[in-house]
Image 1 (cartoon, rainbow, N blue to C red):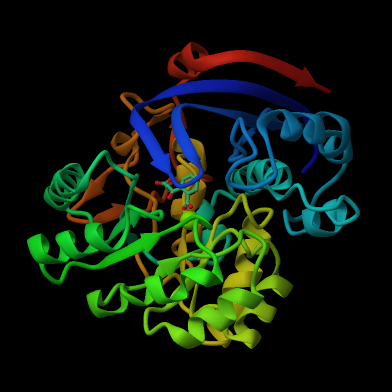
Image 2 (image 1 turned 180 degrees about the vertical axis):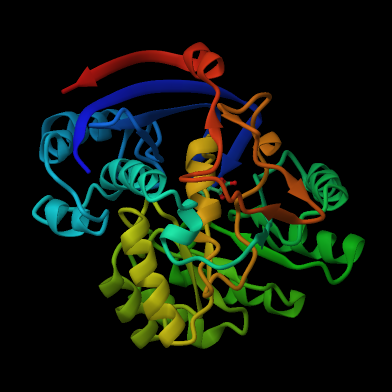
Length: 368
Ligand code: OSB
Ligand code: MG
């Protein structure tokens, strides 16, 4: 296949309600959507999960735009591809910027799968026909508001509940959820809000039998996490700290975590997600698919990666209606009895709704 044209769109979509984490509040989700067009007019779609501000990681929407326009798009335009895995070597000279690389690599995967008449799931070697899903719940005004949220998402059928925590909004919240809802599959995500000095405090979570605590310490740390994991009964799951297969191997060797969250954007795409998945499977480390408040396009890529056999824990890939009044894909991603049915149509398996897409597009550029 040969990419003859690339369209980059800057999208903005309002969340149904603000999403609050220890690093900030998102009300309006801005992101880049990328289309790769081949010689036969077939289109592959990808989404950059970089946020407007560098608060979750160092990448930003404008930074991704620069990387795509000035480096990545010129590398792929007019180049013959036989397989999307070729992006790994092609992009390797460019340091980091994983979300920018993932955006275009995911679009190339969608295009490749469509050309092969395979669903994206099958194209990457996934087997599952439906995936179990969890939900991520932001920091709330108070404990009562959090209990309301959990109750709401329980009624929607979600199979696992992740609550965002930070100092001052942690042990009491978890205690109240356990008291109210009993033994539901529950975990916490701190987005790096603590330090090793909080070890004694974090130990107070142990009696509540959380499935895991996600990224309690530094976004770039795997050393202190190993020290903390030795003191905690609760398994640590790493999110922000893992960008590469080597990061994952070192974290596993050090004992920094017992579980890994794979985000397709954070690790540079589907091929690299698969490599981390394979390593974790060989090392008996369960993985699950994290989310970045994606539109339907990113969501579809998350659904596909979750069909790999090592994704044994429910991920954060909730339904389109978790965040959006109306998504940009048709049909929308739907959660039924706690599962998303994996689409079997070629590529991402959902159609982009052109009217809706145009309505949320702030700007677009074509490269050829
Ligand atoms: O840490 O997993 C995270 C959202 C934005 C940035 C980081 C994270 C999150 C979430 C929400 O937890 C995941 C989702 O529902 O898309
Ligand atoms: Mg996280």
